[in-house]
Amino acid sequence: MNTPGKLKGKVVVVTGAAAGIGRASSLLFAQEGALVAAVDRDPVHNIEVVEEIRNRGGIAEALTADVSSAADVEAAVRQIIERWKRVDILFNNAGIVTGGKVHTLKEEEWDRAFAINVKSTFLFSRAVIPQFLERGGGVILNMASSTALRAAADRALYNATKSAVLSFTKSMALDYAADNIRVNCLCPGTIDTPSLNVRLNANGNGGELRKQFVARQPLHRFGKPEEIAKAALYLVSEDAAFVTGTALQIDGGMAL
Image 1: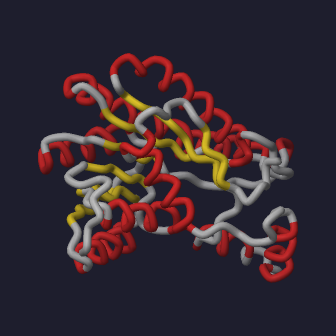
Image 2: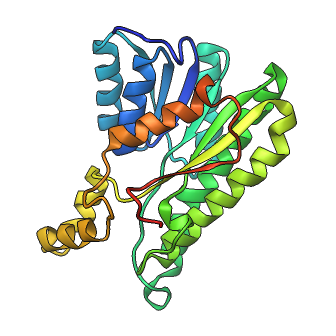
Image 3: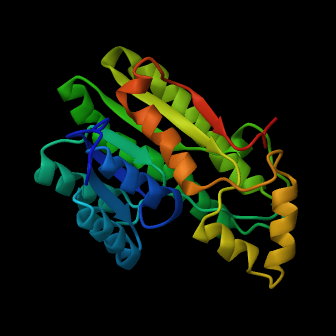
């Protein structure tokens, strides 16, 4: 792997690493010299990502975990620190999309979405911040959404979780700025990922839904996982050393 080195020697934790934005970010971070701890509940595809990194000459480890479980999160972070002695960067990327209006939602859907989208961000941040404080700094990047800036129809629950992530990001950025811990979030629009394709095809009219989704994009296309990964790289690297508490809108104009 020819390493430009923006993250050379940095230990980076990526949650939801097995597919989509997590996969693209893990590959890019490794290309830039990071030691990548890929965390996902899907061990098969997660290992495939790690093997791809290794085949390109990079360094990575796969960890299977339920990101909404405190025990799993603490065990994963403990394994990473035992392996590499530290964590430098945390990318809280794991998340799910739940559709529907309020009267159609089930309580268990509400609980699950907040557990995966919001609680996991809290759990991983809580697990790494103490050693950030001990070592004099660190970086956290959270995955919000353009729906945190402008609500999408039939996404009441998803909108709420991502708004929570945005607020949590700003709170942490303020609380830890004096400790040299930068905290930012990404606000992507509709990104062409395996998860999106599953949702589009769930009702058998994926082609028509895809056209509708594209039509709401001012740039008239979906974003690519690799485009979001490049934005993530900027925010976790020293290029963004003076950036904290920001919500980077990268959505093709969707939230305008």
